[in-house]
Image 1 (cartoon, rainbow, N blue to C red):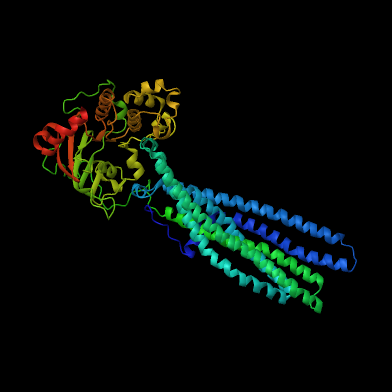
Image 2: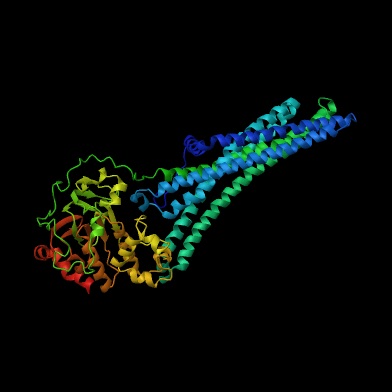
Length: 631
């Protein structure tokens, strides 16, 4: 599902297998609906016979009251039964769509991060919305219409055969002759529908792109360009939709044409057979009624084939989404790495020979004050202490066709305490966090948390002990309370109040019109950049993690709030293992140990003073980038 890649059509067998999988849980109800539809079909088949009896009674000048009543009862009963059957089937179709959407939603939200990063989110949303809607059509109008239409078609042919085999031959000859146009249209309907659905997905993707960076679009004066891009996708969807409609109209009109030409042929030849005495006028009328009745099952079969062609394109897109790799939150990845005791993983830290900071040192090892807020760390101690993190000769690349991001990365972080990762852009610092969280799997080597290979951890259990603040500190649409509780839904009001004070958000809450229940807007648009960052930090702290990952968590804060938040993080580091990617010297000097990365390798590990004296790259960064960031 890379951008621009077309969804391949599934073979017919796989399409039917996938369709049956959606269909199977509802097969009993579908069977009931089909049975009711068949009862309605039988009632319809009896109507021409009643009409024949009516004509014969009129010819003999007999009473027609009973026949009229019977005919009326057949019409009413058949209509009522078919209406009930139609409701049952339509309701079942909605249930099929609901189940498919539930399955897709649950699966797409468990996708591996690598799958999401190579896929357009708008296209994924389109598969949940518009593609599943087409699945509804193929469930009822294709499967059920094929059954009821097929039975009705065969039953009608049998009744017509009993009436007159010659006229039946004339009818079938015309239908087969004109049916060629129908057969020609079917694959073209499927192809046009598939392309139309892909274009709808492109519309969703482009809209998601625009609304995800709405301010940037406006600030760049790009409204017209983005409008043109979305309109181009809409035009593409229209073009293929019109093409599908054209072929569908050809298929539908071929049915009407076949019936009308058959009627004219039967009327002419049937009139001649009446004149010769081969059949009676009543039999000709009944045959013509069956001919007109034949239009309904034939139309059902055409509709079934048309909707199947449309639905097969949707099924292919749904199946493709369901085959994307997902995480199993309850199970490990089955990695072959043996479990080892905490701290015994064989430290490869300091690959460049630099010493590792003291394992038991507290935050503020570089002389910076700790705990400026004056509060205790009991809340963090209840999390069970810090977790150790070890990278053993880790190699990683995002895809097989891309270069390696990590080339044998090795370091050891004994918890608790604070470890800072520094280095030029592209050194692989943020990727360290992605591997710890198991957003990605290491290509080579091992990543251990508490001496246990992360591939042996159940994903849910691993992430439950980690607090993570991303680089862009995302805030979700909803209330401020929703965002704080997002990672810790069971947190108490006391926990929330405490973390608000720690993250310096208490003043913000006091001035908001509805306090914690104030809506923060799409992606936190009603908050400043610094406020969004503090919300993200508070959300992570509220989880009371054993391992806290901060990716540039203070980059958008002013000096006062940065200092306050640094104190909070330093205090948390007394009992929690804190890993921080930082570019500010004021943050880095707080760390117990600093890991210097360059070009996907660890070149040095040590304290600030040790690295300034012993590592030229760190000395350059400290003299330029860090100091510039602080200024």
